[in-house]
Length: 276
View 1 (cartoon, one colour):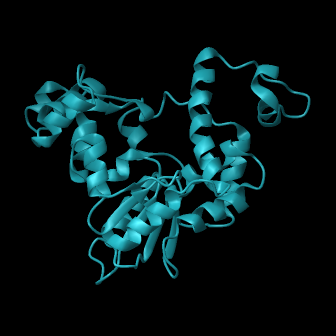
View 2: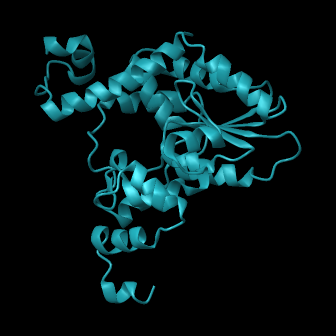
């Protein structure tokens, strides 16, 4: 336990009950999550000019007014807890306030509901992820007490955010939407009036998405159809990395990727595919 520091003792020891040391795969996973948490921790401490730069860029593009802030509650709460398990609700509130680019913006926090329609379709969805420690779930509930927000059974925060972003897609003059999330899936929502900002203060407008992934935001779903998403346990087409997938996605070609997903991942019979 000493190799893992007091954090493991605090999170994984309940009373006098101890758990087994983490495996190598768990250790690698924890290392990745802690690196992500260190960025969130730096921002929480007020270190990092990224947020100031992002706010300036956003307000300049939006004409000085952003009326909607949509927040991935689970994502922000989990990163807050990994940074430190203490006073999560206070630091969650600070993270949301830090992301608010202009005074008077409407803040909507969305939370994962019980169950997921994606797992009903594909059992391997997120099956590669380690179970969260119990303290993490307590932190999420603590943060919910600060921002109850929206939650719907069978749907994730992503679904609710995407729905609300679509509703706000045709705003009035000068209105714009900002999404606080670290999930690349929702980059497909980026438009001239909608941006994504990460917990580290990295802002994604249309140009930033194209520079990073090689496709326009609305083709992100095409890209992921080809290359898959290892974070969510979704395999892509064998032999297609980001570059090759971007080339096919840019052509609007998702037919083969869709056929592969339906036949190989969720076992839709070929005779059914022929009728689709």
